[in-house]
Image (cartoon, rainbow, N blue to C red):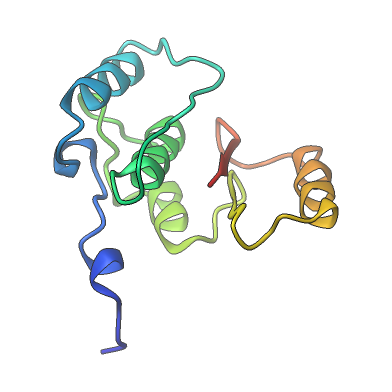
Amino acid sequence: MAHQALYRRYRPQRFGEVRGQEPVVRALRNAAAEDRVSHAYLFSGPRGTGKTSTARILAKVLNCERVVDGEPCGECESCLAIEAGTSMDVHELDAASNNGVEAVRDLISRAAIGTPGRTKVYILD
């Protein structure tokens, strides 16, 4: 078994696993369940509060083939690809290490490419 950092091993994969953000999780889960998701969300807060994890879970819900009660199934092709970081529908830009113009140009160029999923998601961390 390959070594995996604790924060990656125990990163939430479903809204129900996110701790300390109950109002946010409830709002996102309800929005997804009712198909009333906004075109953009801004998560703000101190490091380690679950902003990126919550964004990834939302990306799963938006592209999951079998959403149940606003939660991703975690088993479909889309969920597995997002979890592995290989999805063509979810693009993540780590602003801490990619702060150049070239990284943004690359992100913009990928925006024009069609995707197999329902929703394209960009996470700017």
